[in-house]
Image (tube, rainbow, N blue to C red):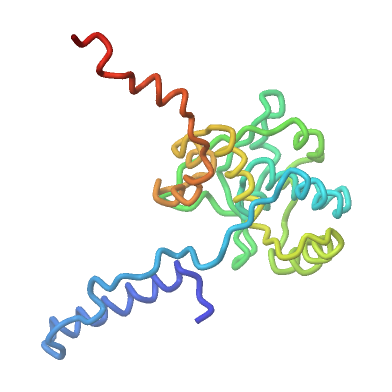
Length: 226
């Protein structure tokens, strides 16, 4: 109770390994945790902000924090990726950034991108570029998530009157905009840095159906038949 799906998976794997050792030692006849199916992990409803709601939210922040929130909204970066963004990873002439490090709240350090995830380049919208401050080192950090959420995010959210919105919903909103614009799940997953395509499937219902393209791909087979 209260644990994230990834934490539940981690605890289960550790517990299952212990039970397997007990089976090997002939303490147990079988491992009751083997092949135990867990929920997919989508335990709460995602919120996708409309264009108007996004504007209302941004207007509720002071300029400095607004720039950071704009970055998350305009690029789909995870909080740790945004907080760990360095000026040397920005290519403002080409309008893009490179995700290569992440801010770790637990250690208070900048770390290399987690193993298993590929370094990726993400386009920067012009309205995000114009808000990025000049400087060296970290662009916005260091920022501890719990402090930032309590002191910056929640007060601004209350001023906006938008109700319950999580910082991670900015990432969902970004993905929804790509989906509604006709981006494929593969393209969306690449932008978000998803390791598994299964993770991107949650946005599949947002991709509009192009009936015209389907009609071109499925011509009437009776045409030309006698």
